[in-house]
Image (cartoon, rainbow, N blue to C red; front, top):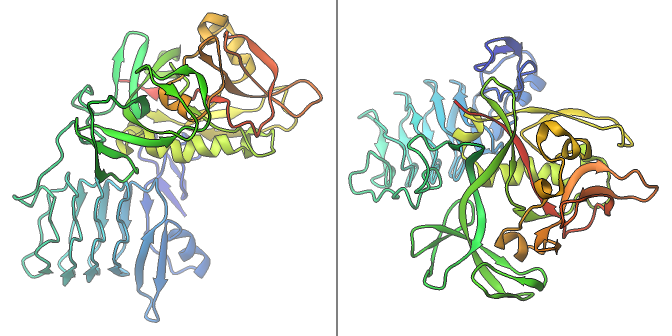
Length: 421
């Protein structure tokens, strides 16, 4: 089976990604009667039930990166909570669906468009609760619970989040909610960074990322200090092991390190934003924990679906001559190599250019520091006979024998390629 890629326009084999340009293909669930295997592949983004009569019930969306979905006419029901807290943006529903369960789409903060066909007979309680970007028109024939649309644009009593409370609209973002370009700097995404001010109170309200709403209208991450540090937080407080702190979720600032002249830019985090191990044992970046972390957990937390789809491009990540095994794959986020941080074309060929300050959050996570800067991972294997990964030291110098892969105190400085119009 094949389908047209919405980005490059080429007809490519069906799957999760375009083999030509690496773009995410829409999660189109048009069913085929060819084989049971084909049906399973086409429903791979769901837990589902196939009924005796050939119809289907969707139980749970399992793919966090399924943003645009087409539900075929053979689906008769969407169970309770099936899409709850997901990042889906647009859903096309074919005539045939009969039932939408309770909280089926609750807290889908990015859902802007869904059609409800005439075949739907019942919509359960709080089915679209707090879908605050959704303006939904329902056929008059449907049995709709009175709270089904609570918190949507179709509910006049809804208290829609203000821009300062919304993930997609930080107060210093432009109206397109995608990025800010300022000379050689780019602001895109957001992540916990600065420790909470003493005049901010943390409320009990938690968003779909697990962040707490503060009295200032901003969100905060709760973190237990991993280990004591000689440095202090930016507010002057000592960093003491096991103390609990909250860190403000703030826009991420990146430096442009390479311009391809076609509106695509390679950007690198201006600070060390986290501390993670490279892997429990492997030296192979393709198999590493840190690669999975960057392209799953971090990607989902730091960027909105709109930013992922419209701005963040896939990059071919290759092995280097130092690696024991060769690899080549496409990722959105990646670590730099030793060759890249000493090359002229990235502008990182000096200690000063490579030295990175840690955020308060990275300090709480236990990042190792020297000269008030953080030590951070590269993805290149050490040339020594010992099992180690190369990295950057506190003074910005490079280290061949930097750390064993299971060291949890080494910093994370991600890079990515973005399209800026």
